[in-house]
Image (cartoon, rainbow, N blue to C red; front, top):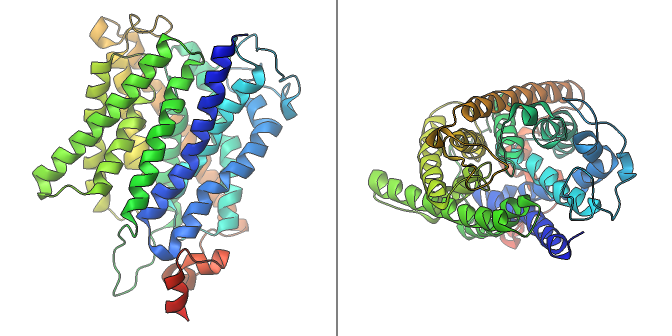
Length: 412
């Protein structure tokens, strides 16, 4: 056991947990003020229910010995997961520390989906959805990519910190959820929604950016050179995406808002996640810039479509994750990380096919699993909140709370 590695993983676990409240602020700033509490709670509740699910069965099914598609139940209830290092994962830190680090990933991933269904989904149905989704989609996918003997890992697909497991799965699921749930209701005088609190958006993005250093650099699972590389590539990809987004805004609209800058930074963070420990700093800049252009174009196109992915989760996380996963097959280098593989630029042509298969497999699992869960919930407990709640304010109906005192005065 290495005390430095253990300290690093514990700190990174706390940083990744902070990302979920950061996501809550980021998302809540983007919605109407009458939906802020509901949006915040959609992220915050995951810190409770998913942590319990992960400890009871999720971690075991994702990481314990099993088959190519799913782990077993040997570590259910964290039995056998103690303070000694694992023989398979993070062999220099306590097994419990590795489990806790992975728990934080399991928590934030379903919370990402909430951005596609804000302001119109019944909260009890949402809670049931994220628990079932974690078991049906996240857990198997985590085993495929990161678990011992997982079929995508055996295929050679690379995902350093969750571009496929976290962002592609959440982004595709968000798109399917938005389609099944249908668009938000609009009043005759309010046909579009705008961010109600831009400072919240920037604060949330900043907390995500900070926590992402733990997300990516912590995935080295040691305080070593790979962790340093991941930290630097994370910073540069986010910076490149932010700068690219700014440039595109100025060129196309003549203005550069804080909301666009915050979204651009998050897109860069998403895109570099699968590549962070496998690519050079210059490659990270290219990945961030390319992903920003792809996601911004997708947001513009989806904005004209009838699909109401409320906070553009698919464009930012789904397409950002896909872009990063595929570009890993271009820019990855064994000179950076011998445990990885060489991409196209370094004469390796097998990796890109493995990355493509990983993107397709994750997308199919996420789409199918999400559709099945939501259709069952719609037929049993119901998905949509009432028209009164949507038009008048979901916070008051679902939670009997208001984000701002002025809302209470206006309603009275």
